[in-house]
Image (cartoon, rainbow, N blue to C red; front, side):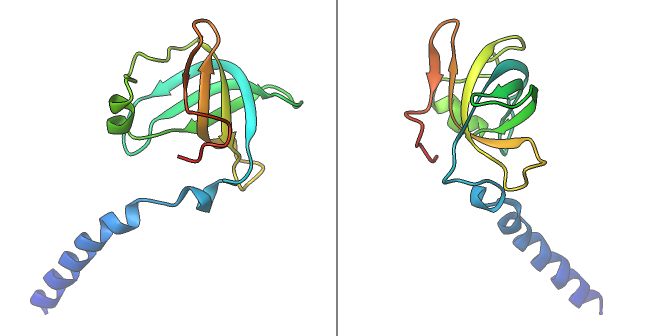
Amino acid sequence: MRTWLLVGIGVAALCAPAQGHHSFSEYYLESDTIEVEGEVLEFQYKNPHSWIHVMGQEAFGGGRKPYAAEWASVSRLEREGINAKTLRPGDVVRIWASPNRNPNDNRIRLKRIERRADRWSWGQNRNENR
């Protein structure tokens, strides 16, 4: 009995990483793009995905509300010259993102970002699906 319990725990441990990552299309409408402009509240530079929290407004109407934009991993951002100090609270940014499948959920998936103050940007174009 104990051997089967240990085998079961081992199999579960080996399978856990495969369950850990998700497909963006499971949560976001990848074929759609919204534009949000606003002020950075927080930049969470972490794995498995970094997050940018913005108090913003969609470009084509709607009131101001907080958005949480899911970005890339720390290793990918580092390769592209982005570090924990690239974005600071108070920075005004424009984000192009895939909206959430749930219209009541303000999490979005970042496709492109620009900071107007110094014209810094990441992402090639509005249709980029990274």
